[in-house]
Image 1 (cartoon, rainbow, N blue to C red):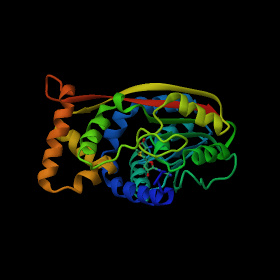
Image 2: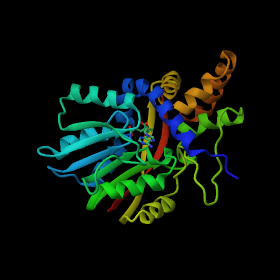
Image 3: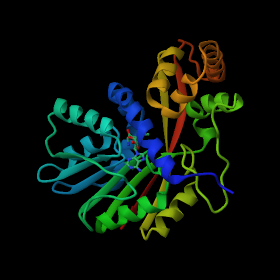
Length: 288
Ligand SMILES: C[S@@+](CC[C@H](N)C(=O)[O-])C[C@H]1O[C@@H](n2cnc3c(N)ncnc32)[C@H](O)[C@@H]1O
């Protein structure tokens, strides 16, 4: 029987992402470069036009929403929405720095979207859905707030094997009993980075929520770091689960973990000593 408590998970998720938000704000441009191909795929699938109203859901520091705002101008606007106030602060600072005015920052839980029925033309959600306690509820909410014929585009992480930048450190922690890699539960769902890493399953979820014209495609990207130290610091800054597991250890064990992760990533070291680690996302799009 599952010991997953959705309510406790939701609370912990907000706390973890609030704690990670300063690191995300600091590294916003780094994330933008890394996940740029996914942003392009999502925005391409939405085919935004001036005047439209867009929701960037689970927006983090607003990468997608800020670019969407540029594409729907003049006359259009974007709601940059996240559960974590810290992420919204980061997005607000970026919007001010870039002089983007047609955005609204809003604290939103994706499972209960506080927007009226049929009030947006398009929704983007990058690397958020698989982290939600109840993705079916979030998809139903997306469909409710989209106008008829509006489009959703979302990205989740592909399989662990296609994302060694995340799975290699997770394996090191799992081997030490510091992180659980939940096995898929028949008929159940456990949120996590790879929880929706199945293209057919993702398409089915969208159809079950009432979406049509469903398409899912893989998008390749790469984590590039000048050296392992940069990878390690970035991971601690941006991956709350990794951060908390590592930081719960005494300093001697942290050093052992660091060495084990470095060894696991050695195959991705270039001749110049930098790291280039492959990554893959699944980008899904559909019509309401
Ligand atoms: C991996 S980050 C991705 C951020 C951003 N979309 C990007 O791609 O740069 C995941 C984000 O999802 C948000 N999130 C997770 N569950 C959420 C929920 N139920 N409602 C709203 N936001 C949520 C987190 O607060 C965090 O900012």
